[in-house]
Length: 138
Image (cartoon, rainbow, N blue to C red; front, top):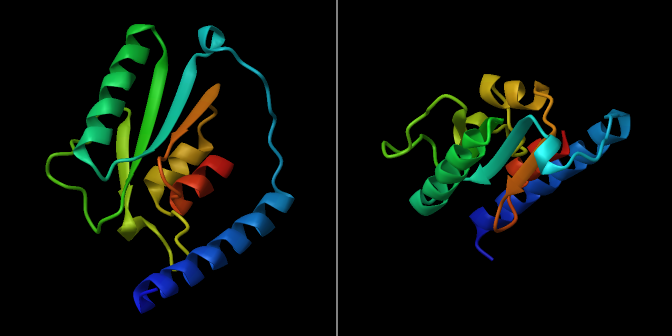
């Protein structure tokens, strides 16, 4: 294992520990809602590849055609958003710059996403991604 990868794993484990401590004090109201009964839908996804971004953008378009509100938040594992990812209404991004030392997301975009009350939350991470897992937990 590369030293940089080892350091990243230590930081992520520290973040996971902090997450578990926060979740012990956190309560949320859980409800079963079918897709047809849902009004507000949240989507968290890895937006590193253009392919993922385009797929989610099309999915958001189709959900909105069904008269539902959608808020998508993509994580890009770089320091800044690539020029081919356009921030649109309801489709935001966060990057490494929005993570603290323990890979816990911070900033206005992620805080606003956490504060939203969604009927359904969809997490589309195709590989382990701690920042998305953290936001999904809250």
